[in-house]
Length: 453
Image 1 (cartoon, rainbow, N blue to C red):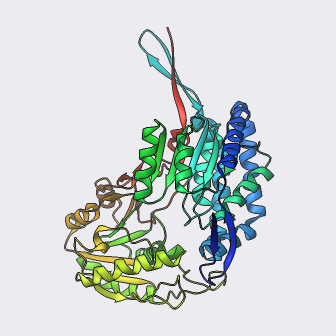
Image 2 (image 1 turned 45 degrees about the vertical axis):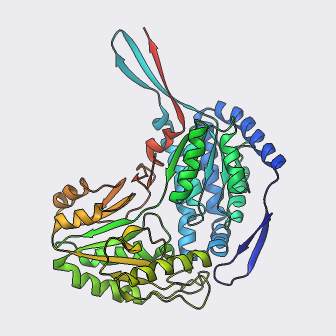
Image 3 (image 1 turned 135 degrees about the vertical axis):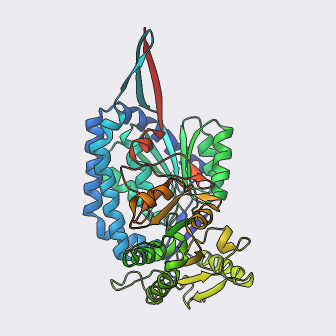
């Protein structure tokens, strides 16, 4: 079976990729197991050198890697180049801080001495999405390699070239064979890889449906898994917020990457005092975002990654309007098969897709509430709990609300983002486990206790 990689803007088939045969998959897994034996024995200083070399390779190849993302999933060139730089920074971060995060810890224990060690597990499978083809993979890969593990990568079907480019740059950085092995396989074959006794864990970034499937397979085989799933992040604007900064950040958070970001602000919860002014400014900014060729340096908003994603989003918008939501902007698909305009909805109630579901594309949902308590209620009235942001000039006031928001991360007066030192992940149906920071580095380690009497 082959997969066609279609350029989201031109509609041209960029390349055809064949799926691997079972014998090829076996060869890859065996190579990863051998690679783990070599890589795990290297002292951290050597692993750090490998990570720094990966960062150098990324920066040297930045234009080509960015162009590949634009061709395969439609990312704006400026955003694609920023993504490559962020990936390089993650490798540098773990090269610098990984030794401290993995350092053994002495623990006082009655009757003796206790020691906690963080030891590598083995080959870890990553099942990654298309929306950040390099960043999603690197934020898994850098800590996994730093910990002494090796990685198997099953990437999304529409970004196989990005997957191969990652494999090539790891080889060019001088890491041993098997440090990163790319698998071009379908979901059924991925389940067999999870079940393979040589594979010691799995990390998935993807949909709730994919998370349930991967978790079931991992559980059946007693494998550790980390799931980063969907999000419907609230963006709570209180009466004393700096509206200049809040509106500018809201526009970027909702419409960058064509809105195809798990931690994008999706639900804008506005207290009544500022709702009209925020809405007016937000609509004016969104109206200026026109979908165009993402390879054009002047492009302000990219197309969506695939026609089926665009069509699914439009159905959610239509169903919400049919149920009583009010359309303030956009809502009509563009002529090109992946084009969808910046869209804004309001008058949203439970039972509508815009309230109950994640809108994974350039659609903003506006909620007007009378006070802060109601803002908190709306923010938490979601099956998701990935990220959130709270806007107020009074830090103590914002922090008090942030501590009551049900999410894996809350940013005060800033855009939710994944940042190297901070653990990243969600609660509720947004998944479990953490990536990044010390916590993410230790997810796929054997946390070993040693007791000396």
